[in-house]
Image (cartoon, rainbow, N blue to C red; front, top):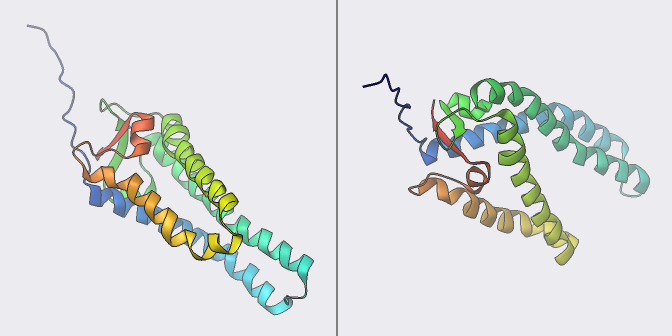
Length: 179
């Protein structure tokens, strides 16, 4: 009889906890956007008119860069948490974390590059393909409520199944468990 150490039992995080964690993370991104967006939009409203085409294009480029800056800040905040605990801010608030399928800690590179970046690139590809096939105005009026909602449902629905795994979990070989 050896001193065999049994691995700890894996207790999967509930689907509702995972969804709430994502909503917390999205709220953080929105909060990070606000300090940048208010002065930019205030300046534009005070100084630009529709006839100022070059300036308007510059304003639009700056406006589109604000979410990019917020996402960079979001990852600057979350990268150390993921590295140390396997958690984003939202997951930390809800006491859940990301681990490998066998319950061992997942590397920050596996979590960031496979779990998040790969899925982001997949969604970006779908969005670009949609932009090429639909009129520009349709993208901004019809597509946001329809296609992303469909993608989100198809992507998130599996967390409520018996396997508790979304597409990004399968790609990265990870699961989300109670911390």
